[in-house]
Length: 281
Ligand code: WAQ
Ligand code: MG
Image 1 (cartoon, protein in one colour):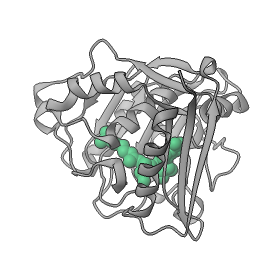
Image 2 (cartoon, helix red, strand yellow):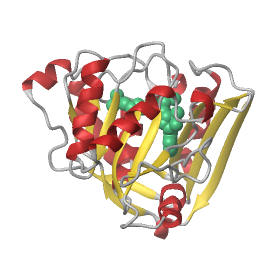
Image 3 (cartoon, rainbow, N blue to C red):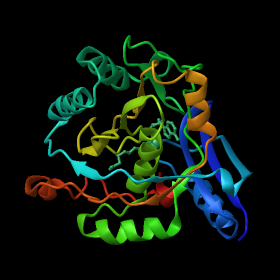
Image 4 (cartoon, rainbow, N blue to C red):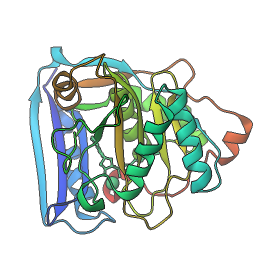
């Protein structure tokens, strides 16, 4: 067996975040994956980059943790008002105090970076106080060194393709959310894209799984981000950041019920937006 490498890309324009990507690659796939990330950086709808960073690090195979993917469900909302209400409800179900959940949704709406900008990484929010715990509030904490095992992704694709979920944007987000949900001390996550054309977001947690919400912003809005809700009684911040940034994680198991559907949900389950992640975002 060859080596495993972490392949990471970030692209920016006048130090503003444009796009990024994180993968784990078996040695023979490093070139192909690096190529697809560079293609993404050069063709992103947020704009042309003036700087692209590609970082490739060899990993120690025996240090890679294994986890299962979160199961998917979709809440059938018709517009952003229903979308925010659904996100709020799900965060409360995941144990986030109502006021903190509302504060988090407001923060993503206005842009979590300084002066309403987008961040390259995520906000860490204290679930007790709503305080921000990430060391750099312009950058945030970037989750890295995670990916699907190739054969696990292939079986996942086979099972979800009839729902239209077999798209790179979705499997990348599920991989990230699964790593985050497995972090000690993280109770839940909320996310929507900063890509102007992509309006579906999600709330996730170990008990909820990955809950898609088809409208969390209006089309054309270039603001988005991620917030991880942290219980400081369960973890210290530097241990958590080390796990999120440095601990390599394979998604190599599927959950028992991969999709948690309702007939109503299946009807709207075929997703808004048509992009494929490779190359485009
Ligand atoms: N670690 C931490 N934060 C990140 C990371 C990362 N690896 N990647 C992105 N972010 C943050 C960053 O602030 C971005 O501005 C923001 O998230 C949005 O990133 O249909 O496409 O890659 O089920 O634009 C979710 C719904 C799509 C998919 C999310 O996010 C579906 C998406 P994007
Ligand atoms: Mg984006």
